[in-house]
Length: 80
Length: 80
Length: 148
Length: 148
Image (tube, rainbow over all chains, first blue to last red; front, side, top):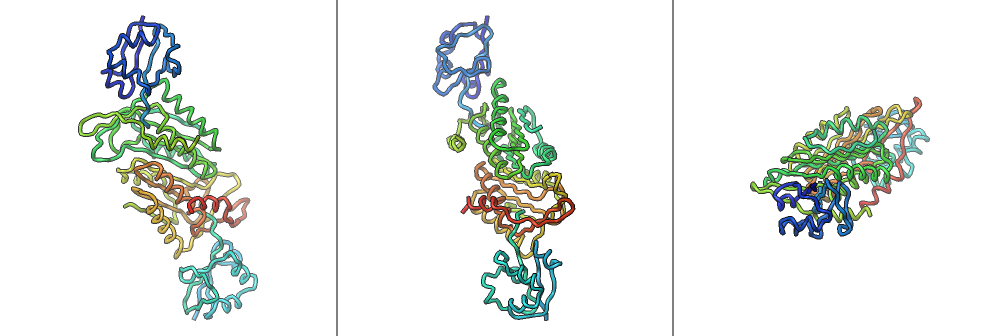
């Protein structure tokens, strides 16, 4: 039982890698609470968008996670 | 003693050729009077510009011609 | 083949792509193209573009559909590189073909403005041996507002 | 070689010209190009463009200088065919290179609008075996007014 976290752009630098697996948890808050506080802070900044399995999430509070979900943390895009 | 007349665009069709030589005359009116009336009419339409030796002429009434001058009659341009 | 949208992880030849695109656009009177390449500033040694597979290409395809819906185009080509690039390397090629020149210009500029400010790319540059993530530029958002 | 303006009486290869132009523009972040080719309408068999030597090329050079003065460009290429052309043949290639995308788009569109409505070209088309002189189009004058 696990979740996959993906860190794009400068979040990769904060996390130290572009992705990692974490133990399954049903809510985002629980996932974040298990991370390094500095990383959790960076992931919850106002400008960061979250996509679950490739779909953007607007209301993260209402989010219910499922085993195997991929959570991508997306900083503001910097242009092609 | 001669002048060279150049007919661009549809004026070439009216004139029957792209250019011709005519006997020297000091004024435009004298040059035009010696041409076929249908051609003279086409050359003096409001939309036709005149260039003498490659320079556009704004006041044709004040024009004084010199031997060997090239008179180009220019219809509205039709785009590249 | 009216719409051709590609996300590439390897170098491409913009002139070969343009030659093929314009040969296929027999009806078009005009083709407007934008080629973006890594600037040859002495200071920038390399550039890296990241993308997120589930969002980036679908977003580009949706942008192309939007442009095709707004202007009567004979064809639209969008090619975007990702990965590691060096000065002079092509990054992006947008090409819009239309019977009328204004439509081709508008569609190409619309596509570029949206690629620059809304597409799912993250960019970092290497200068003096150090990598630095690039933040969005205010001017890109201003460019985008023109279409709203 | 910031400015390259040519009036050609023989066919040219737009992709080869663009390849050379973009290779020389190392500093430019963006290159906007317009390629106009003879439309492949079934009805148009051929097109002929006349020019008047003492006015046409000097006018194009003056247009290029005007564009270079209005926008900070790294380079500007204007190539225009004259003579007899057939469907699919390139007629005109304008390419503007700039550090900033908007400048390149504006300069290329400015050059095209002026080439289309102000340059010393006279055009006729052959359709159903008959040659017909083309009159200026109102839309071209409307395009031009945007820059005044």
